Image (cartoon, rainbow, N blue to C red; front, side, top):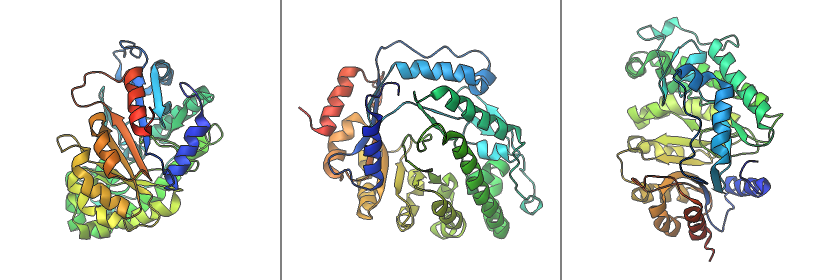
Length: 358
């Protein structure tokens, strides 16, 4: 594997993490660059090439991987990526691309929810494309890197892709039974697309990964509902919990992607699910940094759950002193305004700090 001396050791660390048995120090993802100024291939003018040309994507990814320093439990990976609205796209949406992201056209916007029944169609061109991307990547990988599943935002988030946020916000009041019917259909389709994606990668690699950056030996995926920032605890119970229970029963492991301080009102309820491994606490741009959320992080640990947390290097001393290592995963980046990625010397110093090596 590119840049990895002992993949089995990293795998064992992940197994400890999922079992909450990493007693020595937290799992951490840390990367740097070998040579500054060595950038991936310059993007061509065509957005279609940037997003859709798998040969170009593979060349660019391999060049970046070869120049990357991997430390902790970091590993090289290439994720099949057409943006966060791919679920809506395989159900009839179209996707609009920019250089940094993509978004949906809301194919059902303004349409009565009762007029629509959602069904998975393997002939959908976006489904055909995302599956072909996976096949191209696993055929190329040959053990050099892991291949990650696409970014599937299900349930209410998929409804937002199809109808738009305003329509869905009104629908939970105006036609709640139709919302529940559709989220039930989406929960079933979510299981179908993940199973079919897993079938593509399973012959080529053990376990699964995706955009969140963790590895699990089985079929793991994050559970989420970004729309939950707009709903009360009662509505969370009514609309988010039923499909979440279905997802958790289906997956081998899951971490809930809790995005934004406004969504933290649902933390207590999420911690009650026995088959949810942990929480990715996303405080977001413009919010206080990771160390500000120590009360919430300690609440997660007190419930016996794991944590996935992005933090900066200057926060490490506080986080290491205040939080238990068991089930703690730190995705470490430079301090704001640092201006460049870590070099080898900086990576080594951070490793010593975490692992207490002298």
